[in-house]
Length: 220
Image (cartoon, rainbow, N blue to C red):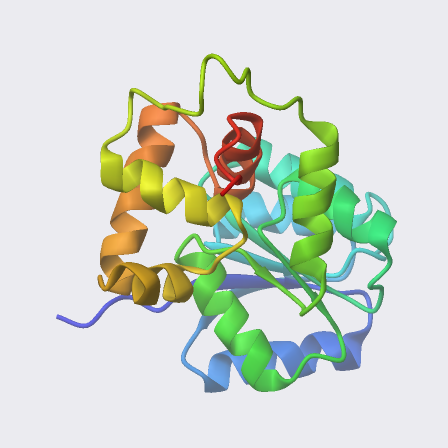
């Protein structure tokens, strides 16, 4: 039996851009269950449509994209937010990620990049325009307190393989890169991450990355 198409909502206050993204997603087999032109519409329609992924511009009429991200994930922690913004400014990227976005693309990204990003974010991966992932990881490291050297980075709740995968997540590696490094399938990596999220009672890879850095698991 074939998998159900990924349910997506598109939020952008520019009609031509919003329509183009909706059209590209539908042509690629995604199920666009809602569109919105501002934050208030986005929140109302999210509640009714329950998309898996929200493709969201930050610069929308109030509430803005950062606040929409925060409130969407409060309503449904299993949802995923992919920011698609004209801005690649550090402050905008970090605000979005701190609010819970698991992906951030600038609008100069290609259609192929967008479609790939929606698929990956739906699977639980993090996706950033090249150059932004390092910025986000660097900020997480700056914000966190290093793990106690005597205590070490051990995470007793996790298996050895789950901890190994978590180390790679903390270094900003994609699921594909982790799978290639460990000679396992992409699906197996996903399963390890989902098991880790469940054990640690977390909702997404952004939270997991913060946790791993706090534990010092990003160190070689």
